[in-house]
Image (tube, rainbow, N blue to C red):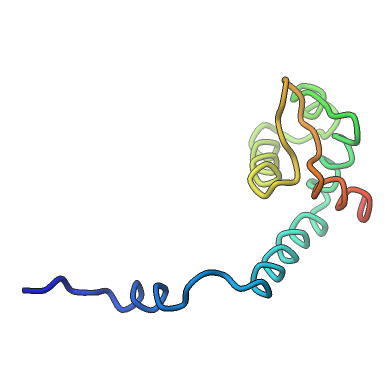
Length: 102
């Protein structure tokens, strides 16, 4: 008996990769999620150009541990922040968003 093919898997396999237009749309949606959220804007502003340690960010943001981790995970995953040498720093994308909304 041949393997059954799931209709959804077949549909997504036939679509191929993401088009450039879809990628730009997704990038704009993610940037909007950051720019409309005051806690995320504050974290970007607090990190600033020189970077901050986790302790400094927690103190200056005033967020509890849960929301701090939630927002930081989002900013790291989406490429607005990076963690290097014990400091959170803005990526190029983070710098461009920082300059436009903070």
